[in-house]
Length: 351
Image (cartoon, rainbow, N blue to C red; front, side, top):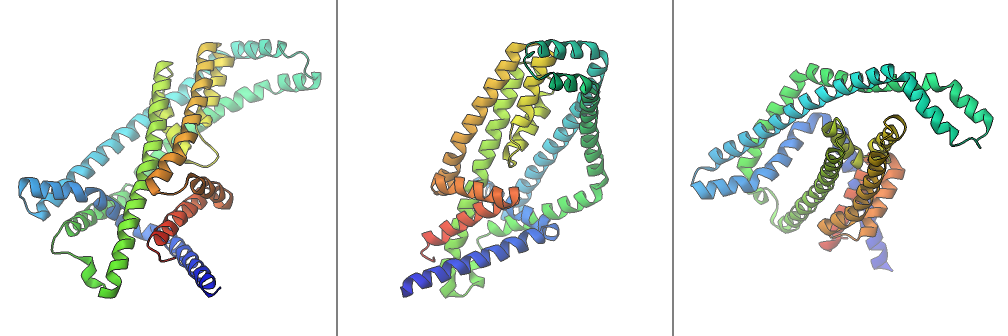
């Protein structure tokens, strides 16, 4: 009985400390962002830096400078090209939707009217309401398209307006990454020297397990998002859908957001090709593709995440569901990392 009470006390203490650290971390992220990003980048660059140091027999500082510079140059290049392409496609998308609706108003009305004739058994009140609100629907659809593209461009403009802050974050992240990478790959630097001997072993185990599991977790979701992006890009390219790149990016982002999912793109596109374009082949193809991508996502997510973390798939599904119910995306992050760290401490027989 005493052992059980002691175990419950340890679990309760773990939960309290974890919650406080979680809240402290995310409430201070505005001030610690460059250093958090730098730590993540340094962990990524550690092995390449060690490889360059051993392969070319150069100093640790020079190798760290090379890897850091190349890494940030690639990231900035990809981000710049991505922002330019997304802005161009967003503006063109908004213009084309408005022009299409304006030029094909009568055709749109006739298409929907013909579709209505297949459902004459509907209540007349519903049909009259539909006809009365059609103009309003078309106007709203046009406005939504313009608002979406306008807000996206506005966001990008605001992003440009924050360039001084972004440059400061990038500069501090770049410099800190260099120093972190240099220290992590230096044989002279040993963090364990700063820790009392009786605590070194446990802290080293916690650090190594945490690094391994968090790295595996982030990698697993990067794989899932990349698969969704590639699958969607292939589907849209096969059906020759315009703005395939931006729509695939939106699908990949929506895929990691709670509730939203890839249906936010696939379903409206299928309806457009059904009602407006009368292209039933593409409509059916999009619906089938949507189902396939969703099924693949649901199958691989628990397996990839659970296998990479060494956690049972039911625990992963439970953390996702409970997190969504608690507080959406932040709740999911809280529950997932709660399961991760609980598993780490349980492995080390500390709980």
